[in-house]
Image (tube, rainbow, N blue to C red; front, side, top):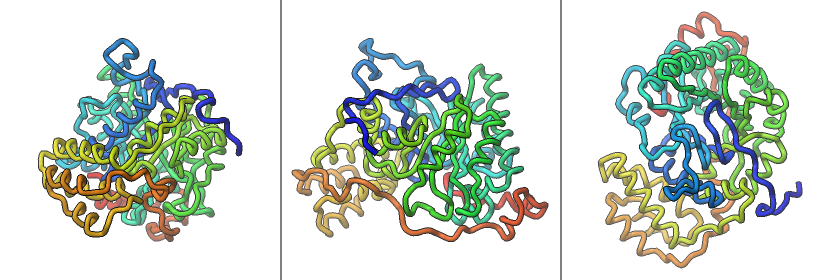
Length: 421
């Protein structure tokens, strides 16, 4: 495929997700253990740097986003939150949905398998003014979730999927009327369980009928996990099937601004969803937003430019957790992602993996050779990939597209070990 030079290409139109306006067709995917407040804030700040000057939110009269409505640099979604834990008042889960006062639009991803509990969680989020947008997770391929019928396994059961999506949309509508706001519901799913059990088109039709405001497709099956190439042609097929007034979001193998444009050009999707590509690269959103507004792409940062980003991330993490040691432990995985591909010796990497304070982090970073350009080894694909994995499902799950009485009785177990609260 031949693309126009990015700086000459036209910008894509803003995307409406219910009342929410995405000035840039970009969405940070929910990632467990990654997309907490500090990381989302970093990604959004970089995204807004990529906007044309007249669109950048600023106090000087250039652009004034409508609070809770306008998303200048796209949406930035929370970690996956388990609905039952939220309803039961689990403290870790409540911490995950705590409002970041800097957030433009509050997007929360919910996971669950019980329609009544999912509806209750949605009402709680809306009535307590914690969410402007609710996204439902039907794409998680993790065995401990799918072997009990949750995540990517759930859309195979048409009746359960329809009940769950319908219950959440109705709850969002009802609670929204109570508080005088319109809360859109979107879904994120995979192509299916494997090539022989494809579910995404059926699921899209059901979700459309239920009244969702957007549909995201990670263009892999549960069997693919994160391996191989994403099947972008499935996104194009989804765009053909879904009504034009419902935006389709494409996810899978977007690691650069050029990748984002290529997906949108080849599939007709309305926005791109970025997951693994952002790990250790929050500045990717500056490139994505610039590319999709037809602006010149910024150069990748040098190691000297990356170190203050790491330290800012660390400061915000300490503020978020109010526990410096715990915050630095959480940050260690991010540090490894930030420094991927740079020439850093084993002892230095090990020392950075053991940092326990902001002061120690600063000292270890200043010991590095900072005059290194961004390495080619850190470009392109990143994050977990691995191999295909045999789908883990409840016994007999594929025997019927509707739930049996026994499956219904045991379905609640799918929430017991779900990450994200």
